[in-house]
Image (tube, rainbow over all chains, first blue to last red; front, top):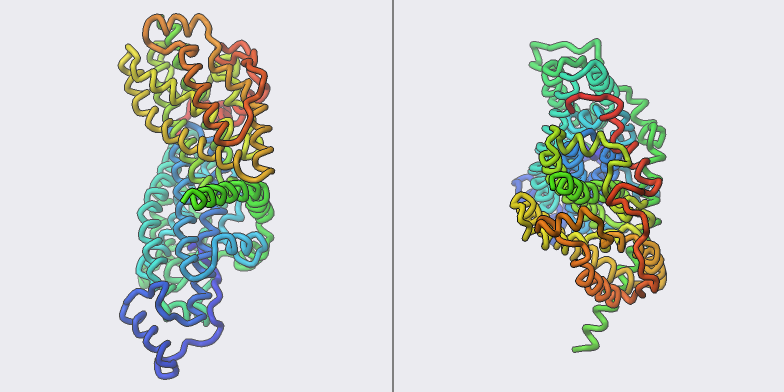
Length: 330
Length: 252
């Protein structure tokens, strides 16, 4: 999941009877799985929550280029380099679709970027962890994209039309990303001792941060309850985390790697694994800025934005000149 | 003949490889999202071209070296790229000016190569020329936009041009490899592309309101015959080849 801890109204969910007619009509559409489109009436809380959620997702795609970009110049073969470049290019494209979806809610891409850089908007905690070896690029594709897909597949059915359509396009590409990540892990896990060690080390470092991607248990969260009523969140965090663990553990076994959790055990009754929760204190610390590379990530984005100001201004000025020349000629 | 063809193919492959490497350094750091996407796309195309040229170079050499062997296991003195492509990215203006100066040459060269008597070269060139046509359109458009943008963007683009233009002219310095390949009808004589190149560049610069530097000379680097490179190439290779060197002979 690329959106964590998205704040909703902070109030409980209203019943249909408590709603004004407009809101009631809106909620009835959502309940009937009719998509909400940009010109439709929507509650202010719905609009604001969606901006936070889509924005966080968009920012995650953009910041998410950095840990992978970190290895493009060092990728071990020409083919791996090309696959990685194509993947990072896709991610920038996903960012673009998502910013466009958010723009239909009345906030510009530049405004959202400023909010990211000032720390007002967040991106997924996972990107505050570094990619230290080539196996990390495999782990990011396998685990991080794997966790993202878990959440994004249901979001294809989300209530907001532009968001849902962006998600359909994104999901098609994400499953390719996950496969290439797993393929890297296969090569490493079947390779030399050093490669195996890198693969296990990558799993050790990325396992718990990947579990954190779904956010803390949302059993008691008013935010989640409201978002689920609006169908901008389809499954609970715990449901998705369980699904992710159940899918991933056999894949790790197939690779001959050990999931770094001594308590991990198949639970016949629930038909899923019992597993250890990640360290939620670490999660909150990382969200606040204490992850190993929070500073580097934001600094890289700030530098790109500040250093690029003259380029954006230059291209804008040129477009203006051309437009006035055209008007003058007419 | 085989030796000259091997050399000439390395020149094509190494130019694409080293420039692709430089452009890929931008990933996640471009001034605007659309540029991030476009730069990644350009790097991807260049690396695709690298793969095709170096694979063929390895076959022509006949020593069983793959494209990866050539990319990751040669040292600086065996690289045959021009100095232009190994220069650091600088600011975005310098990157895009370097890109345009190379793209314009690459397009003319590839179009001429589609007529090569070597059908394998002609086929690769056919595919690559389509990509290069798109690259020129994009880098040219950006050079014009920034040259004729604000005062600041104009000044930065002029500075980039002044720095890079002499390096670009190295593309037209010819040697015995070029002569042999031109005579055999396998590669065009670089000199034969120079006029068309200068006309195209002049038109672009005029539209971009930039002045062509007065000094018309090519830097005596001659990266293309491997006698000289800048100090930057070694650093590119330490990064690019690191995994292959540290863990030799592995499957990735």
